[in-house]
Length: 326
Image (cartoon, rainbow, N blue to C red; front, top):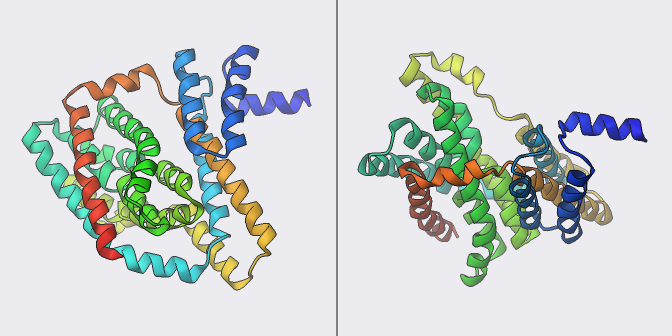
């Protein structure tokens, strides 16, 4: 048992003593008990701020693994026909949102005289998939670590704000599960926060949000191709090979397809939903551990103001597009 525990702690890159372990346990257990992603995120963030550091070196990798597993398990509870129907219904909406956000972000950055590199990364991150898009596109702009860190920090804090602010907004607007799921799939940056925010609202909202968000994430492929051809003069065929569809997206589609061909017992579906939701809580807890005091300070400059303004400006656009598609 001690050997197993030591190996797990080592794999996580844990740094700290028994007091740190106790603090992390006290923070994550209530979130798991409540099965509430927002509580998990808040608990992780509180631990990081109290300790003044992230005690788990590989927290981002653990969060990514938990999130992708949660999404694949969610696919096993869905119907492929419903997935195709949702994707076709909202494909035009996603396209309009992405293109509008990119154009508006470019114009707003010009108006506010924001640093071109940081402004471009934030516009792309807001339009497509947050930190993933920023990391993928940063090399084309030859962005240094400071600019990348600022963009990622801004997106991280806005994801946290969305998780706590949008579910009450949906209740206030009396949005249906589908409407809220579609709205969150557009209005929130990172996939983890999209799924978590929708899950707070309801299981159906989480399914809708996951499906539409993964379709929005695929916009990263044409954006990477265009940037590569524009910035580096690379051939489109070479860039297409580099910008592949994420494996977990294909696994999600395959899971939904298999569940449609071979229907699962209702008890197993309930168990998969339970596991998916709790994995999502764990993922958000580890995401919260990445919050540092330096991250909080990154929204104080002009670029931080730009990140907030572009997000607040495109949110009504997302809301309007969802109502239009209804």
